[in-house]
Amino acid sequence: MTATIAAVQTLPVSLPVHPGLVVRGARGVHDRSDFLLVRVVTSDDVVGYGEVSGTPLWSGEDGASADHFIRDLLAPALVGRPLTPVGALETLMDRLLAGNPFTKAGVATALWDAHARTLGVPLAVALGGPYRDQVPIKLSLSGDGPGLDQVHATAHALGFRAFKVKVGLGVTADLARVARARQLAGPDAFLGVDANGGWSRADAARAVVGLVEHGIRFVEQPVASTDLPGLGALRGRGIPVVADEAVFGLADLVALLRAEAADCVSLYVGKSGGPGRAVAMGQLAGAFGVETLLGSNGEFGIGAAAQLHVACALPTLSEFPSDIIGAHYYAQDILAHPLDSDGMTVRLGGEPGLGVVPRPDLVGAFR
Image (cartoon, rainbow, N blue to C red):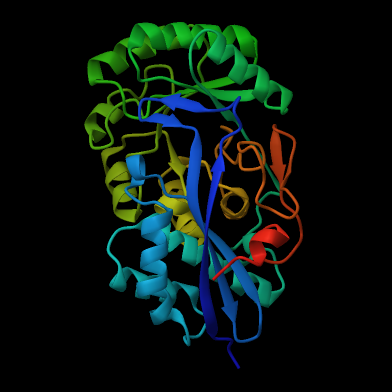
């Protein structure tokens, strides 16, 4: 008999970012995250976990809004329904709640985790993989002067050797920051930039000329998320263009592909609405010759594990390092056992589902 959903529970968790890794970019300062953990329990007593990594300034979602929608709207509709197919439950959530992809992704991740644990296989296998068992990663560098130096020193001590520099705050200052980052990282280190949509078309064109001399490997979201023509106009100028804020769900991806506006797409489990949909979006992008990497909204350990399994389940993945940084980014870890990561790569284990669980003190606090 197919297992049914017995309970959907939540737990608010707030963590400060590692003080040496605070991100300062065109969309503001990210120094702490107020997220929501999700737990699904099945009629067979299988437990799956998910994470809502919402940031109001960027996604319009946060732990409080997610807790309300999950407890008062989604959970009552899901409890008692068969666990599979998970896609049918995702469709049900879409009918009940417009938008809010990060909230629904938190629930969807827990459902997929429970499904994979029921099968006794890693989530990457349930999603159609794995095509690889490790993923290269990078970390953001931001700030100026001693602040930038400190972030790099902290990241280097954690093992990171690949980086992206936060720009979009004024071309002159941006280029000076990139020049300093190149000095710090070394002439052969992987270095990209992320403008978070902070440049105008004219500023982006001027910045790209200056970035070429610093050996920058990609420029991420150089112009506004709605400006697909402006994004596409920067292609072919010596630095590949990565779309991030321009692509949330499938409709955004289709529009981007039609406009031929990017060389690579930064996929998020949260933006996509869950791990299954993230893999489907990556497959579609790959069919059109557009690479993908896993981007970050500062996920905790559960979200980082979901990123890892999605990255390993994608048939093709960009050589650009992904942003699976949950094992390093916060002052503490929410996981009982951290992901296997040394700052240069994060590695997939063979355990069922996501392969991770929250710390015991957190497990006992779900409601």
